[in-house]
Image (cartoon, helix red, strand yellow):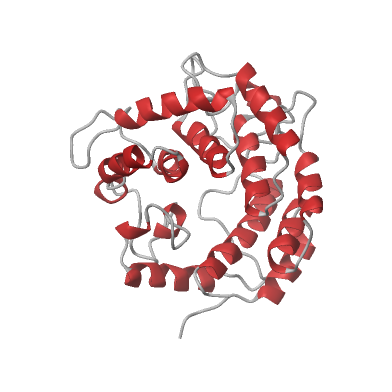
Length: 299
């Protein structure tokens, strides 16, 4: 029998331990809540420059605007169908002001040093474009049909970065082989970019890197900081879903449902460095786990 989540326990966990933002998203997705409270909760993280910060990305506690916080703001508004054109346009206008010369956006800005942050967040030298942030933001904008000059440059740089990725099984320098987080950006872009023929051809080449490079753990019981097939293909229609057979997906759905803790929430598998960041991430991931389980017929 397929495992299913306990929504009542999750609601209690969120009420006791999560941000207002994640409680609002839960109400919107699972309790008939309105879009406006989600939009307003996201807007609370907005800065005067139009970008987002204020620890919206839980591992970046800086108040300053960051590309990762912009991505998080857009992702939440998209998932909750609380898309706000003004907030989005102001945020992308801000991205233009900090864009690399090649286009797109960088991974993280040096302003991360203004406050505590996870040790794995390091500002790269030279402000290079990032597959992670550029791909995810571009994918969100394309999914919403949101035109902006920034998106044109982001698209050009994404095609360039994707074409530079090694073919599966080919020997490649460490600086060209993608990591799992970079593949999030690649897949988000390829799933939504309008040139479908080019996207499908590119995915046929680089999608297999998930398996050939060992980026995904097919064993649901794999320990440590691993990526599940559901991380790369959370929905039945995800571009990467055909890479995994149904038995593998069902096993990982069982594992995800069973990972709900006694307190009603879910926990992440990467290192916890801050009590506040841990609480923020647990609230966000609890809502996301419920979303994925419901989308796959488990709720």
